[in-house]
Picture 1 (cartoon, one colour):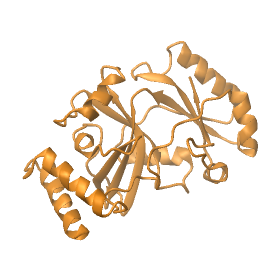
Picture 2 (cartoon, helix red, strand yellow):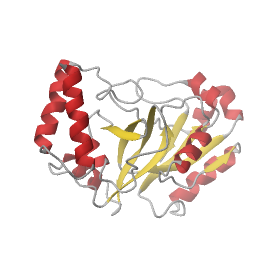
Picture 3 (cartoon, one colour):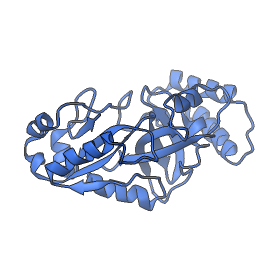
Picture 4 (cartoon, helix red, strand yellow):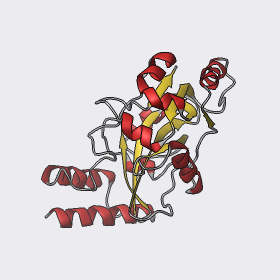
Length: 247
């Protein structure tokens, strides 16, 4: 029965976290595959956001984007680094990390729980979902990708930066970032502004190599801050309308 199978998975996961694993990675993966086959909509398998993959970021001219978003262009924006790594979504249930997924929907929990900058527990009740980027401390994009493919899980040489609370759409983006800070996630220095010239200047500073030099970046990300405007703009099938990547 799916309930028994899910219980075995949760028990094996808990033992693994305590350093007392009682099954191999292959056996654990087999249980996950069986659960996926018998109950594909089980909460242990469901990705944050309700889709089967994580959204990408739109990439267009800043002025065109500002014109497209309409009234939101008169509000505040957050500016954060576009980290060059692998997108990762995390799910915490009653404060415990229970799921991790790559952009394509592949389970990445075995790696996520070993990354030093991913908290295994957080002070959050219910379901708490985070989106961020897994990256290599050597600044190579291939490092996290290789780690996610490796048969023997390891978090060595990896770090995680969080930039969205997917389970809190009613919060402004700046408030989401503040909550992530409070819960112990690594977050990059960000700028909050309503000045369009500052949006352009942030991109210029990045191109000059003066923004976030300690991180592997391939651009900056501009987010509409207000929750009401983010909700109004929504998402397409591939990207949120309230965010822009400037490369």
